Amino acid sequence: MNKYFGTIRIWLFNALLILLFAFTYLKYIKLALTPNVDVQSIPSTKDRGSIVDRSGKRLAVQTDFYHFIVTPRDVTDVEYFAQAVAPALDMNPYEIVQMINANSNRSFLYVKKRLDVTEQTELKKIIDANNFNYAGFERIPGRVYPENALASQLIGYMGNDGVGLSGIEYIMQDTLSPQISSDASADRHGQNVYLTIDANLQYKLEQIAQDTMKQTQAESMMLIAASAKSGEILSYISLPSIDLNEYTRATPAQTMDRPAVYAYEPGSVFKIFSAAILLDTNSVNEVDSFLCDGVYEKVFDHDRIRITCLEHHGWLNVRGALQYSCNEYFAQATERISTPVFLEKIHTLGFGEKTGIELPGETRGSVKNEEDRLWSARSKPTMSIGQELSVSALQMVQAATAIANKGTPIQLTVISRITTHDGKDLFIHKPVLKPQVFSERTAATILSDMETVAQSGTGSRANIRDISIGVKTGTAQMADHERGGYSQTDFLSNCLAIFPTKDPEIILYIVIEKAKGETYAGRIVAPVINEAANVIIDHLGIQRGGALGVEHSGVISIQSSTPVEIGDTLPNLIGVPKKDLVKLLQRKDLNVQIKGEGYVKVQIPSAGTPITENMTIELYLE
Image (cartoon, rainbow, N blue to C red; front, side, top):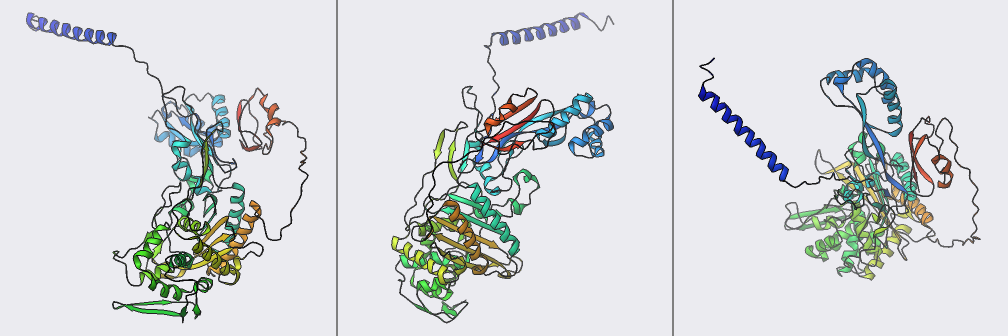
């Protein structure tokens, strides 16, 4: 031992200790002399802004959900715990036991996510009664969608992390939930987004669309109603759809925003744009006629073209060609217009480009050019009748604004205004006019021709007797992706309407895809146009021809109401005015949260829920 602890070793050991002490002391001195830096936690947004319709009806509102968590390694009696909490979680006790045993060494485990206030309240009561101190809750921001599946693809959906995943929830993420700021004086509330849609009109038209889907046994359907004067979308329908409160169970077909992302060949509806292009470039005039003998055949540079027509229409001018939807007229007429001019006009109408509407994933569609490897001598005449190009429903409506607005397109929009949480306007939509593409005379001529189609042409079943309406129908064969070419069984039936034609207010466009049995648009879509247009006319109060005026005294009688009384269960509070909720607010044993003004639109939890001490009741008013 004495040899091991020699003088040299002891001196070396002491030197190391001195160096370690000196290093530690110097670090301490350095930290002591460093100025203090205040570390502030950055607060998150207190409330995500609401999404509402044009009148303020709430379509997406902020709420809270809870993740139920447990520390598996601290659970003393797994089976007893599982038996106790399973009923409140609507789970099998055996499933909970397996979950905990499989993670027995972990300190954190999600047992079930996204419990609502009612489920959390019931479960907390069980935890407190059994002293399950190893179980608890993680509070997360969530969304409630009061109107369920109404305009679901337009509104979109917010995920568990508070970030929008689709629709307006996605594209307006930074508006609804502004980025976190360290400024303590900054507003912690998100902004409210007012959509252009009218929720009541949307509901009525969705009922029509759902009935049409059942009657035609169609695979999908689209309906867009837009203001011809402002470009605002009043109704936006894509079926099939999904209840946004059940979004995680949705199929891809139910979440697909078809009007924005789906590209297809429109068929004969496109003829109104081809006719406008031909007239506006003076390639043809209103009286120029072409003979339709049922088939158009030409040979260009050894390339034989053959386009058939449904009938032998005889001699037709542009009005007759639209009235009877004559393919041969347009095939012959396009010989008079140069290909570059024709394609340029198509692009000017917005085809082949995104419309720029406030929606994610919008398709450009497809418009070929002469350099395209698939371009042929057949392409131009075929494009004039709505084939060999693909469009979206939004592009069709966007292009129709040019016809409805004297040749000048209007930018489409789904955002009416944006406000702060306390109602201060930050943005109000004003119509945005695009460069004029047609003369006023061309637009007026096409509108008049479309009115003829409704009166005595292929769209006669869409005709409304007491309001002038212009329509154009189209039935297009769909591509056969398995065998190539066009399918003999799958058709896309669509119809576009503008009314009243004398002073257009509404553009209505409906697409039915893969209907069973009858597929001809004049028979299955035109009647739906008629029904939907009548609903729109009555809902918006558009003056009908020969309609009687009604006088009103201006005095409205309002029945008196009584304050809310609560017993053992929560009553139905939907429709109750705010003034009648005073007694409810005075309850010391309840946590009542009221948001908004007016009448109760949404209540959480639902009517019939047992009243428990300190339970939370959320009421959304409008």
